[in-house]
Length: 427
Ligand SMILES: Cc1cc2nc3c(=O)[nH]c(=O)nc-3n(C[C@H](O)[C@H](O)[C@H](O)COP(=O)(O)OP(=O)(O)OC[C@H]3O[C@@H](n4cnc5c(N)ncnc54)[C@H](O)[C@@H]3O)c2cc1C
Image (tube, rainbow, N blue to C red; front, side, top):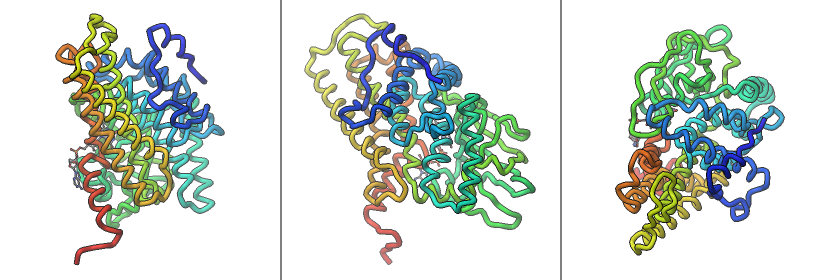
């Protein structure tokens, strides 16, 4: 199931070059084809719709239909299940291309894709006994079929407003074991795709009567949105990423059958310990926004932004220096981020983990720095709401707030883990 978009792109103007040139970054033809598909869809279709989703804080439903038609809802679903079979790096590069044109679509698509990436290639790297693995294989096939055949959309509501999303304590959302499944009770805040996903991939803690909540007992359950006891409350009127519709989700005595598990018991906890790059997957969106801020600036100074008078501003030395600084910053971000998404694996070395934090920090802070520099360089007219730059500025402000790897927590961890080996103290 694919969508031909190349013709549309050429009809509206110049086709953007990829953020990561396949030859320079040594990507295979198959990878390049998937990433191109994302870029073309982003430029030809999503870019034009982004302003309305942002203005009205509405979910990009039409974009999801197009992602389904293009096969991209199943980008990381194994080929034998009808997906494109993309690994971590390919997904990250494709998501950056989507983020370049619509931040909210890329960020929510990330929540959806991670449901398949974590239950798929990532879970394959983790320890499970033969029976558990066979059971997991059967269960994930059901999720994959829904996505590929019906265009089902999954989300990842983890945040609760306490220390759980940062990995500090067990999730407060509880799953009490009962015959054939669990009864789930709890609340998730900032639940992107709330009211729009078909399944909420909820992290909760399995707690039997009288048992103390433990992070080891984290469950990852796909709860159908229409289940009795599930409700969406509150409004969503934030600074940026308005199209994510990240409202509050409530679960009141929700029965969830055993086969709703996206990962078997204990596997999410194992993943969080052994596959830390799973938390770097929010960064591709912001890699794309960083590129978008740069692209806009070059076009604006050349007098080539559609809808603006063809006034050139590129001849001023101050503008040239600003663009040079932006280009250097962008290449620095690209380099560390590409390295980090390329080396994502189970049991990474300490150096690789520190680099992943550094990449997350660089992208999340860097995207907003580039957007701010772009506004300063292009000037007052560039921040009008009729142009995409002010949205890029607002959307990029949200990146460093995303748990569990906020900019502050990345700094915290890099400093501590660089100075202390596991178990070391100053006593
Ligand atoms: C646009 C958008 C979409 C989102 N979508 C989702 C989603 O789909 N699913 C989801 O689960 N969440 C989502 N989130 C939530 C996000 O991951 C955070 O959970 C949310 O921003 C938390 O805000 P908070 O103020 O409650 O954080 P708090 O936990 O109150 O933290 C406030 C700040 O304190 C710092 N901090 C926190 N813990 C520590 C610590 N232990 N040590 C030192 N510093 C610490 C952090 O830097 C953090 O920025 C989204 C957020 C945004 C902005």
